[in-house]
Length: 411
Image 1 (tube, rainbow, N blue to C red):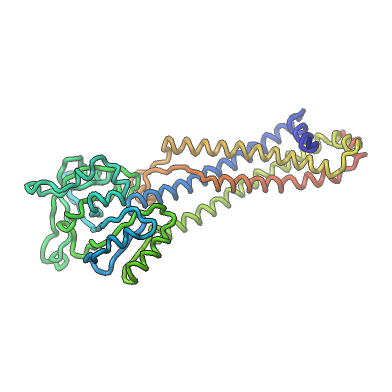
Image 2: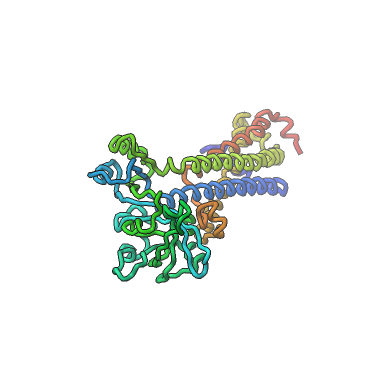
């Protein structure tokens, strides 16, 4: 039996008295609140970073390959499909445009993406959630000149468009760049509307079959792009290295990490600074443990003197006070972590943090999940435990220097 731990429990949860009870509750509450705030903050940053990575990987494949020329080299697709970790390969294309409707006669800027049907749906899985999308984007009968298209839900709302509506797409032409002719006009048939939670897609994308992309593409649009879907997105560097060796130095190969490196580095730095800042709050709260232990030592001075007179060495008394501090701070840490995890779960389930469209454009997401990572929870527990242990050292040293005669005479 650990005598010091037993005495620490008796000192803390025995007959405390009003002052000791109030100070102990204050220390416990302060640590719990500080730790809960740290858990919620880490959950917010981790949830945002992970959700953003998920949306980026769900709408744009993990690896983008840009050949030096647009003409397709024989066997190029097969080379890409044989790369390590590649699940799916699809051609794609992007072009800016302007969509007009009755609700928006002046037009709204869009990014027109051309995807292969059906292979392109395997590399953009968020779009593949739409039921029967290959059938909806399939070429229509020759009498119907409208190009089938999928719109993001935010874009559709601004255009006042519903499924089955026909809109007008304006794109640049070579004559237009020379100031000779107006832009090319094409009809788009709204075959599906998707909500991905990724504002860049929901508010600004119009997806058309790649076979019809040439009909709307401006002269400078790149159509010879390739997207690769990987089995393990976190290991995209291996695929990029193998792709550069396979397709030659003139082909540009970029993964999702390179395309968004600055953004994720900034988020990682922000999360680190946030952890340090809130850890200081936990440190201040852990300082209340010193007050609680000083009051505990004053309230139990005579008991400590009796124990010393019965043969308890000063080291054991110091250990008892140190254990009392760890028990008090550990209880606060446990309560704070559990409460913080509960808050994160409630905020995620209820989608409490939602953004209006103008703010979603800044953060790229329409709502923020709270997803604390196990490693961060472990780090919070370790840092909090070290702070509580450090706060217990000074009262423990004071108990170690206590004189038996003075302790027995203490009133």
